[in-house]
Length: 256
Image: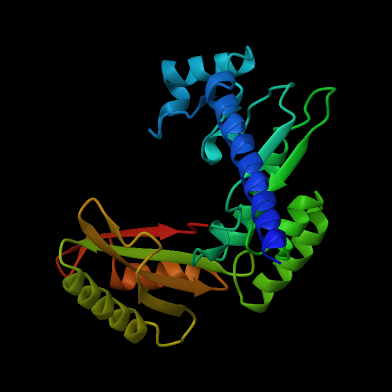
């Protein structure tokens, strides 16, 4: 029995050693034989000399793997690219935005188009925690019609664009509590002015990015079947003012 255990232990040790050596040589191969580059993080990187040099190196096969955000998923044509990988493809699906499924579908469709543009064919690997989501399934099958059918039914049921018109009022300030109180007061003014109840007023609520450059932001969303009802209400309450309750205010009509 002891001999069998020793034999089993030795076998496992050999197996682990083989795996370790395989991973070591794989790491060695990637480090010394493959050239991997990531474009700079600046939002203006498509116009920089560095970015153009990276693309030129990738096109000239001096760079083997190009790593980046969704900016490298659009408009690039490299016939020898045969493999594209997407990590955490469902990140955008978790954002509190009714366009999240549409954006996910568009991004996956675009990035999938980077592979197989030449005669070599291509393959796309998508890593996701929600593989059965209709946006990911439609992108996987290049099935725009099924995605549109599902998405448009949701929007109609929830009265979202294109079945309504919208406006977003954003208040910004250094003190979050003051921004929130100013947003509440503005909402009360809008509700009081809209006596005919032609406009649905939602919020206030923080946007997905609630703090930017040291300022806090809170949103009010206005929805109506007619954009004229929204603009009339805004003219009556907001007018041409750029501040509300001491907070900086911006008005965006049809932001989507």
